[in-house]
Length: 271
Image (tube, rainbow, N blue to C red; front, side, top):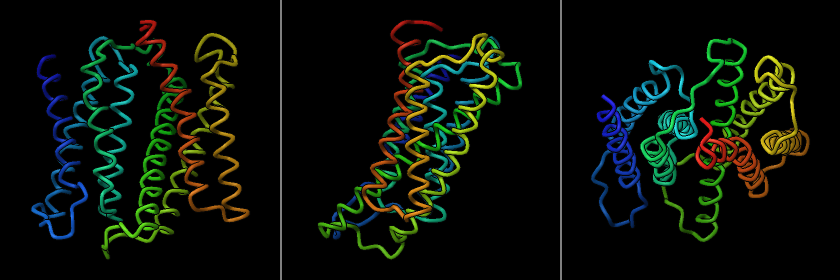
């Protein structure tokens, strides 16, 4: 069974890479062989398979496994799910080709880093809720960072007259509104994560809250996103500068969350 799961993860990564290749930018005269509808159905099937694999990796007989690699695979699945859902509502040419290579790497990461991390407090409702909210917040900001980076690339292409001429591509302002909606939801979840971590630190981790690099970078990201949302609401901040803030804030969270798990689990071997 274990070997079958490994093969499934490798095939899943190949499938994501194939979908990214099918969505690659093409010269104007080159014919497009894949119909967008068929790509969406293929994407839906791959996302469903990814969900089944993630479920199998997390919920095992020994307990709940939320290792560094499995956590990133979950975030990759959420990123693929968002890409599929947003593609149904607001298709953006080339978005899959920019995003799915990251998802492919996340899908195969548990094969490369197979060491599990069993949650000692998985039966604690407060602890489980804290972890779920934290993971969702992190995933939303990863999604926001990917969309912001794609929008920066699209703006650069438009500036140089290289953007695809497609009536199906939504305006940048519409994409921006969606992006700040994601950030607002992520900010609420991040606030809940930090607040629950401070209030329930004793019951969650058996010790009072401490200033570690994880809490420091998470706090800096929270402050940055709070200022960005306030500036958007009060002064209408937008454009390339605001998009760069989104990417920087998400990188701070990546360093704080994924960086600490990588050091503890992969480098130091604490499982």
